[in-house]
Image 1 (cartoon, each protein chain N blue to C red):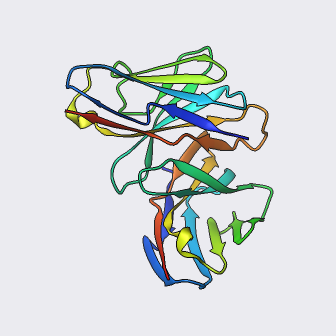
Image 2 (image 1 turned 30 degrees about the horizontal axis):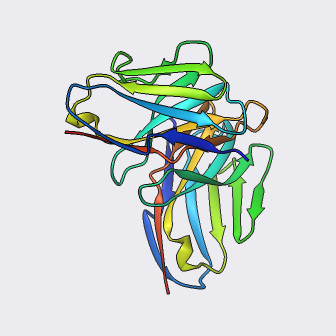
Length: 117
Length: 113
């Protein structure tokens, strides 16, 4: 149980295009999902908190118009990188918090490697 | 600012050794602390979660402890194996960042045969 998937696992796109990344909780409901960004040899940086049925909460310094987040159901959140540029190239990881667990444990997806040419 | 620090940054040990990874945090108002493993180019695998009311958790060869008063958690790995080689991350929730995980920088572990 507690499986989180991400799609795609990797994507290469041209500068100026938009890329959508999906995060799904496969066997549990997640009222809250989180999006992280990870640079090489660095730890994870929280970008935003995605809440089902409401607007995402972005961390300081993260452009909400650049990184669009939609959490339309209890099992799916999407991150769209709009007008991507080479500096957006990174490893993007999502996590989902099981709504039924008091512990608040988060389960992570396998990540999406984005390369912008 | 809440910070999480992991020591050492890197560790190389021969197979079979018992080892300890350290994690310290600045805010004792912790909700829970999680230990993760990350293999190169992969996502995170949750290893152990310790809630604030708990002192330790065990899973197989892994044991994690939590001491809120000193702001420390340790991950003990018994009888290390080459397959344990990975980056180990600790992360906390709680305090002013309720619900959000604050990560340490990780410890890169290499277990050589």
